[in-house]
Length: 247
Image (cartoon, rainbow, N blue to C red; front, side, top):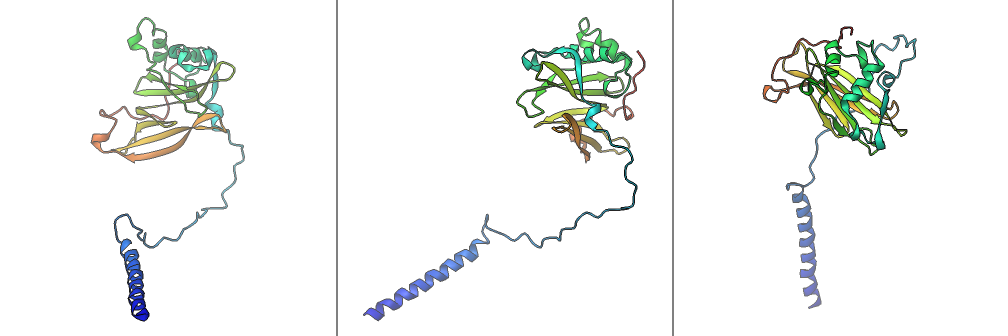
């Protein structure tokens, strides 16, 4: 009796063990199971081309040095940029650089004239609606301004409040832009790719804690389908930088 009972038990254990193996093997083919990713390509490290090229003879300038500047005469009540007048901020920069026609502070003569008429003719004011976003990650909002200029040029500037109650510009650029986006803490600029139909430039500006400035960290040329293009009307010929006439 004892031997007769042990044999079925041993057979049952063998069946269970075999079934478990079958389940494990068959489970790999079920949806959601582990699957092979195929052969992995061998990693290839970067190869330096022309290693004998001469080293730089001048110390490169930090990019942020030409982009950041305290806005003179502007105080930030309570350290909150929401309390600022965007037009007053731009006008303060114009007063600080009356002879600046190109670069980070350069504006067209027509644009400067329109700035003086923002109170009497608000519809023709070149300063667009201000947007606010914490771009630096310190828990306080920065102010993002757009300034319309001739030839479809748009200047984009960002400002951050300082601990001493003043205001510092941390970004200034201009281009023939067809769209501007905020994605997380990045400011993304869209412009038409001159000479390459169906493509556009996308430049992402991000906060760099070392430079204490917004820097263009990603620059791409992207294929854009006609129905998804942000540019319904062909722009004027693209120019590298705005050239402002003397005021």
